[in-house]
Length: 166
Image 1 (spheres, helix red, strand yellow):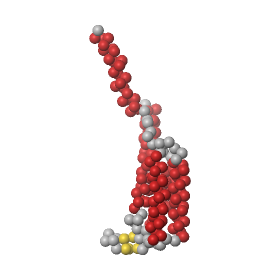
Image 2: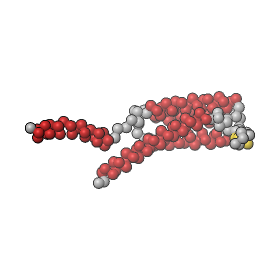
Image 3: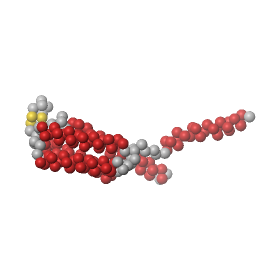
Image 4: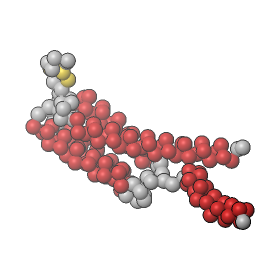
């Protein structure tokens, strides 16, 4: 009698105990996979934005005294803002085509707004690090999403490679 109940328990309980192992070995993605084209475009946009801000922003020292006046809004600045919004729109278009990409899509939508806000502020006077702070936060979030996706993709490839090479 004890043997029968032990077998019954083993048949019923063992599969339940094995479920966590099964789920741990499966790779479930809650974000869209890493996309090198999007990552490259985002990195390019961040680089161009940083170069623009360095060229146009007022620089202050630790006592908040102006060290260098920023450049005023001009035709070159207008071109930059238009190109930056266009690049963000192109990245957004690509990102919207992927499933499980809501966070990246929201960041890219916010990015266009941040460029609009910085441009409006720039039309009124020089860019400062304070006026560019919102744009910097949004760009950092975009880069973080790309790095996370790349890390997940790299980890997944490493796990697959180690599993196939015992």
